[in-house]
Amino acid sequence: MSSLSPLLVVDLVGIAVFAASGAVAGVAKRLDLFGVIFVGFTAALGGGILRDLFVNVQPFAFVDWRYAAVAVVTAAATFWLHPAVSKLRRTVLVLDAAGLGLFVVTGTLKALDAGVPAFGACIIGMITGIGGGLVRDLLTGEIPTVLRREIYAVAGLCGCASVATLDALEVQRPLNITLAATLTFVLRMVAIRRNWSAPTAS
Amino acid sequence: MSSLSPLLVVDLVGIAVFAASGAVAGVAKRLDLFGVIFVGFTAALGGGILRDLFVNVQPFAFVDWRYAAVAVVTAAATFWLHPAVSKLRRTVLVLDAAGLGLFVVTGTLKALDAGVPAFGACIIGMITGIGGGLVRDLLTGEIPTVLRREIYAVAGLCGCASVATLDALEVQRPLNITLAATLTFVLRMVAIRRNWSAPTAS
Amino acid sequence: MSSLSPLLVVDLVGIAVFAASGAVAGVAKRLDLFGVIFVGFTAALGGGILRDLFVNVQPFAFVDWRYAAVAVVTAAATFWLHPAVSKLRRTVLVLDAAGLGLFVVTGTLKALDAGVPAFGACIIGMITGIGGGLVRDLLTGEIPTVLRREIYAVAGLCGCASVATLDALEVQRPLNITLAATLTFVLRMVAIRRNWSAPTAS
Image (cartoon, rainbow over all chains, first blue to last red; front, side, top):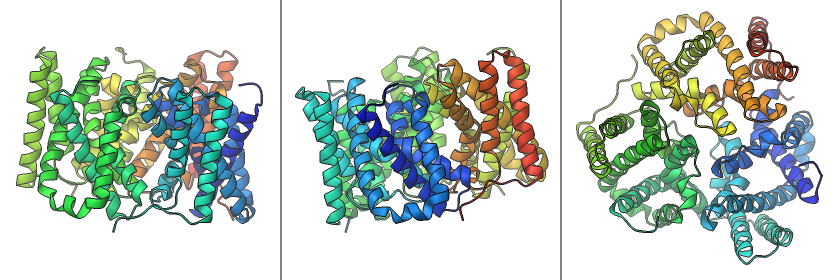
């Protein structure tokens, strides 16, 4: 927890991007400064908190202060700079896809390491990636976007399935994480480019 | 976890019915295929996940893949067959009452076995029965039905109280479960027949 | 758990006030008797349940029946007496501020005692104070008030920070709790008097 490894850096970047998405949603709903920071915090860390509750450990978000600090600072900055953040929409989408990739993959591995079988570990991994956005939407009075349109959770699930498969094949962790997170990222970016959506019922 | 006992079969039927109720709600809100499956999953397993968080163990929904698989397959089938499922409204109500009976009773026992005192165990048992529907309604932007009308949670609470009482009297488990779940089922069916409702404030 | 210490008495008063706030919200949304009691229960005990999930113990709300009993009885009484309760708005605000002060301070200490570092313990303490109201608002279909206006959570955070600081300075518990809870109470009361609000984004 004390060194700033490459993995941690990507992790913190993902958290910052998720926090900004929460803060933008909070600003749009006219929340006050505290509300904007709180929604940013839950958007950034809610998925990881759910994951840790499901694997039955104290949530990392409360144990390592750097995660919470990055989320709080980013959300507060977004409160004041939100017009500029909104203009970065394209960049935010790319970083969000990177965050999704990393969160679902590390979430799945954390569940596997805690003894959860592969099927359940993939569900926990997916919730790690989408949970923050779900809670953000609930707090701001919206039916969660992830349930309504776009290929987002499904890209995450592909990442979960591949990291679990490669882990069963005893592929080394750094390689495994890189492969599965990249797959998720690419799937998500292609889905955005091609406007892929899951079907709705007729 | 490996044999297909009568209890497990009833359990899985209850989960399938709850998943169908979640999927129908998701279709009605125009969620996409992923959203319909996700809401079905949470409607079916959300109550049990809450119960396991409260008694402080890893949620069974992630540990035994059969529960998640039944929920996912049922929700996906409902996505395509929802007009047919809607026509089965009467059958669904009966199976739902059976699921409620089983979930509240086994939820109460699981809490008692984990050392929770009877009063708290009954609340956990009730939440096992109503939690999935609660989360389903929150995810689809509704004030939870269970808080507004009909005798549903109260029927569940009667089942919780009776299973806890019989357990304190050292009645054997299979008999106890059968009696208390049947009581809940009958109460719920009578409440539907007679249109019983809890009062609202004047 | 068996003696009725001064701390417990204040705790139960706070729970009763929070339960009444939940019940009033439930009555306003035309929930039935069960719904009013359930929302009262979650408003009173939801923050403490979240705290206990985060520090990874069985929630006290299910372990000690007196908390749940006070919440249920108060919510039921409010169901019948809600016009009278509404007239007590001023008294309720004062008692609510006292409850907030006690909940954030004891929540922070419980997290510290469970080994959570100070920064995370303060966040958990704050959630102990605001979590019940958050869940109350979500269950009744509102964007949580605490995210939109007034100085409420921020007063709580000041209490969390001061109790954590005094604890690090090894100030004795009874004195520490009294000082930090009083600080929170006073901040909250001044914020109400002066109509202080956090800023919203321009």
